[in-house]
Image 1 (tube, rainbow, N blue to C red):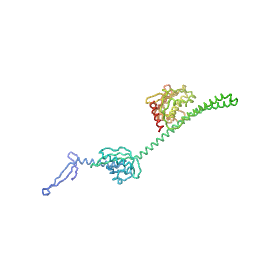
Image 2: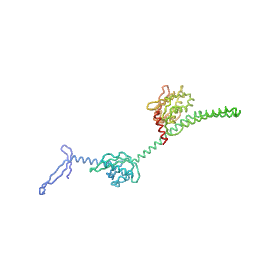
Image 3: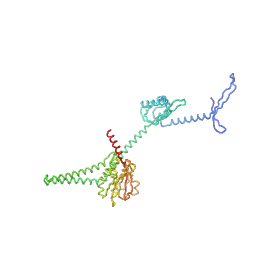
Image 4: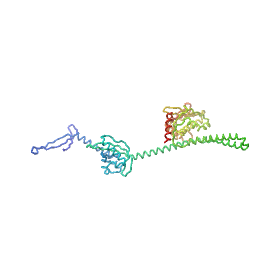
Length: 442
């Protein structure tokens, strides 16, 4: 017993002494007096004060925490249940304390949890049992929801094991993740729609030349057929049969040519998700050059392709990459409308990082410095008409392929647009082939 008394020493420091008194008696038990014992307990009191302060701090943290904090004993019986746990699980603390932790978990999960606690309780290990493990919990109404659990072991002053679990409700995070996935899916849809509209816009700009390109073979078909009919009307069929046969063969050839033009344009306009495959770069560039061949001829633009090495393969979406090429080549043709020398050159060469660089160079007036920095931003254009989305779409496509696009002055006058695509080596082609084979077999 005794009374703890706070004192101030001569040096000014505060201390605590324990004042206790004990009676002094003779051999017959008569009271002779008393002995006062003064014991310095400053260190012990400081330790007790520190422990009291830590306990108060711990209680404040537990009471105000946003996450559920639940303590159980080694039998899995709940010993403490903070306010956040009450809110998250829908139980009052009095309904849970003294009961098994299993009431907070689906049956199967409760069995797993009890087994894990038992194993650790008998192992003698002092450690974090689970850290950030995602599990399924159960509310008082029976509904299940995801949680993130961290579980640690500690001992009471009496040596008894305790396990404290911090449980974070992941319901809102899962909803946010689902919303993010939906937003990402919608963004991909909008991007595909945007690219499709851009292709349609490009086709709209080429509509006049396309009509002219189709008109030539169709007019030839009509002429050959009309000529054959006239031959049959004015002469003996047997005499003119070779000429008629020749005319019809020529008409068929022109009809095939018209069909090729239509198929080429239909492939260019086709809507669809990005479908990256191993493609021959020569074929991609040649196909794009064919799409702009007529406007190039009409404006007397010389088109030259210099692709090195020949047979280079790239991993690309054919339609989208041809869209980039057509846009850049079409822009170059239009840019040279008032130039004396009209030369459009497309080159390709391997660059570091297992990439291929394609360059589209013209001999036009070049890009005005005031818009060069914003060249690839939407709705920025150097043309008198047009929305100015073409180069923005080009950048979107190229970056989706893991490449980069840039513009720079052409040393000979004009502009050079350069963009990169992933090159495919023989090993990469074999890997892609095995992947496609596996997907086809699944």
